Image (cartoon, rainbow, N blue to C red):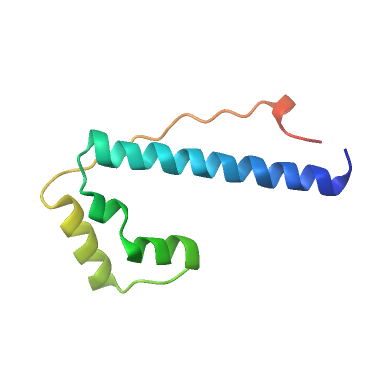
Length: 89
């Protein structure tokens, strides 16, 4: 495998991991925590995530308050393990 192929493989693997994480997070928010689809699919979120747009503090607070209201969301990190054998030399 040449250098460009290894770089492309890493990029593809990272992209696949990001897509899988997004699917899991969307499921968690919509199905387990019952967050409204309008928030999960929020256009402003897409602008921030995919286009690097910035949001003013008051706008961010409005979006977050509207999404969770008085609910508390506990964030639990998912375990991630990478073995040496899965990382290309």
